[in-house]
Image 1 (cartoon, rainbow, N blue to C red):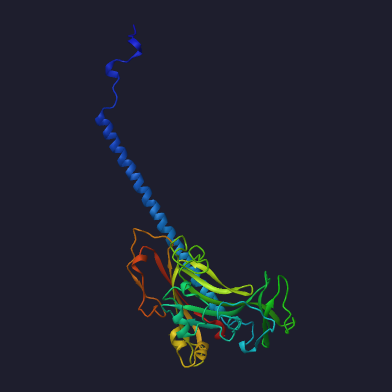
Image 2: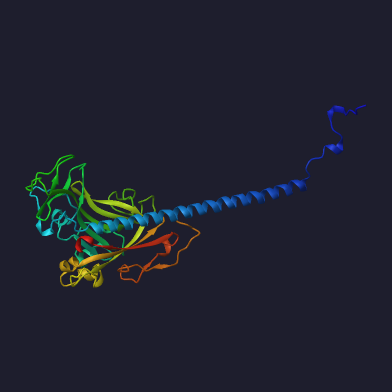
Length: 355
């Protein structure tokens, strides 16, 4: 006969729950497990951010030094024509910046020139001959070099009004405006067998303190309010966009650029001495000295975009070329030590001078 209980209740010994001690023990164990999971999550997230930052600075540095190397290799390429045999079309129209005017932009005889690092852009202008007004002082990162290269680049289609070099190989060339897409310029050098059309390039490479100059108090130059209040050092350039010379942000996170130049002083196509831009610019004949340059060693530092509070870099960086602002090496400011950094160096032959 089955035993029945009033109100469907179980006997007292079968209604046991958790005691307070058991509950506290269970909660404590659960907190330990949850803490371990959170610690693992935070650790993995931090490792991901570090890896992401490392990937960024490596990729950016590699591409940046590669782009500079490519421009240097192209320096002095004029489609098989000597610079002295290139004339300027009488109707040529270019909008420059400051004293980087049309005649300076189209100075094909100065196909390569560098300017050594100084504390201000004004010091470079007065001491080394950089035309004034090209780069504003607020847009120049103190202690970094400047590089100027000019060349003609093969082109198949022109998407906008631009500047073109037409060359008759081994004879002469003419530099002038291309009016529009699909049009060819009407130079005094007719299109015939042996003539080629090239896009004209005039580039000034430098480091500026910010990436996006429109975010701060000034919409046209770098200040502390740019890049959401944390200005990012950036490899930039002055280059022709159509028929106007404009400033272009190229690669974020590049905070140092130094270059040294190999010179062939006896004409045997081998480097006889290595100089900084300041040494060459201070020589008795800078034009002749720059004409002797047949190689360049580029050195730059790529930096992560985000700070890492768990990392504090203490090392100084010794770079090829002039060490920046008269110091021996690049010393990271105390306020900037929480960024990951990597150096890149590459030696480039100025191939159009040794062929």
